[in-house]
Image 1 (cartoon, one colour):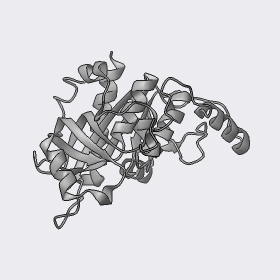
Image 2 (cartoon, rainbow, N blue to C red; image 1 turned 180 degrees about the vertical axis):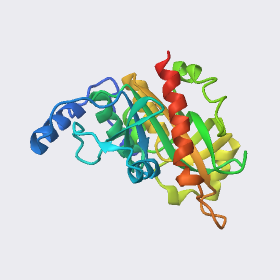
Image 3 (cartoon, one colour; image 1 turned 30 degrees about the vertical axis):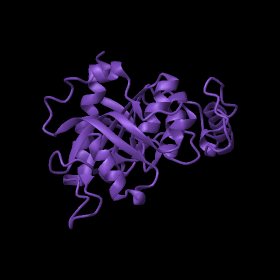
Length: 264
C-alpha cells in the first residue's frame, strides 16, 4: 500500500493469523491471579453504560463469575426468565468491546448480545426506543483490523432472519435499521449528522460496526442493539432511559433475543 494512506490502512493481511491471541492472555491472567478453570454462561451481554449491571447488583440478583480471567473487567452471572446470563458493564467503545468479545468467545460464550446507549439521528419516534442494528457505518478504527474497507458492517443474515418475529409480543418498541459507529462522540458535527441522516441512519453509537466485523471474521454469533435515549444533549432533560435507567426494558429485549436463539 502507498505511504500516502493512513497507517490504519497499511500492512493489513486479513488472511494472516494474529500472533497475540486471547487464549494466551487469559492463560497468563489465570496464572497470575490464581483463577481456576471453569465455565461462563453461553449467553453473554455487553452493557456499555453499566445500568443493567448496576440494577442487578443493587437488587442482589447478580454475582461475580469466579472463572472469568480478564485483566480489565468483571463478569457477573444472573438468571432471568429461566436463562442464565453473563454480563459485563462499562465496556465502552469499539476496541474495548471487541477485546472483551474475543475473550468471551474463547471462554465459552456462544451468543453475545450488546445493548448500547445511543444518540438519535433520524427523528423516527420519541426517545427512548430500541433498534436492532442490521448494519453499522464503519467510522471507527477496530473493524479495519478485521475486514477490508467498506462502508458498513452487517449482522449475520441467519441471525437476522431468526429474529424476524422475536419482538412482536413485547411491550417495548424495537425498530430495525442502521446506525453510525463512531470513535469520537464529541466530534459528531452537523455535517456528519446530516450525511448520516441522508443515508437513513437512525442512531449513533460506539461499538456495533467493530463487533459485527469481528463476528463475520470469527464466525461468532453477535447481536447488537442501540437503545436510543438522547438527542446528544441538545434538549433539556435529555438522556432519560425510563424506569430503572431502562434496565428492565433492556432485559425484556435481551430475554426475547436469547429465547429465540436458544430455540433454533
